[in-house]
Image 1 (tube, one colour):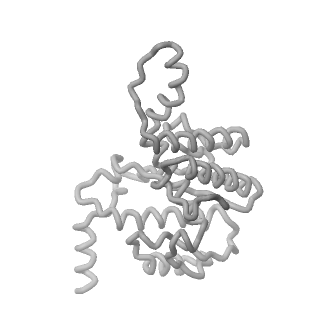
Image 2 (cartoon, helix red, strand yellow; image 1 turned 30 degrees about the vertical axis):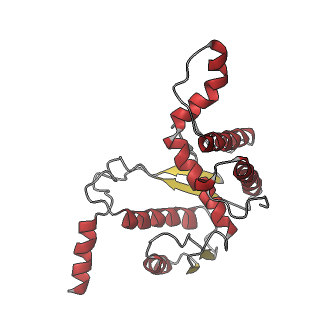
Length: 236
């Protein structure tokens, strides 16, 4: 993954140099995924759905639960049962990794350790940042992306454009277009248009963009009040 960018971060993708690095990372990841040497699993959730649109939502506790869902799905269902895991999450999150590690060990997931790390130390974290950032961006900016794609034809026909993307948005649109094209060319089963954002209908595919859906009416995100109540019970 060598490029002129020392450490890639999606939120710093603002110019051609970062765009080149992002496209190069996409290409390498797809090559490795097709060879069975890499999986990409990105879990996305809508903070306006019935689970997350609750008063006093605790985003840190909710993030921890989303990590749990992701680990359960990936560690148990997408890799061999005898796999041994060392997990290196981004150290900048406020997740209680020890609690999550204890739970996963009890469930016999073959987990050796969870060690928060920086993306400079673990280059694969840069890849995770790329795909997570692109997944969210593809949903938040889908309409603008479509307008950008149609802009050349609109100019030829004399239509007025309502969207004027920034330089960084244009660079990210280019990365998204590149990724979408190469996924379609390699028949990787990643959809962009159907749900107006990156989505993989078949989770077993090596590039899996998974949209979390509430599992039942009582599936609600944790709240800050709920967390305080649990803490009080532990002290008593």
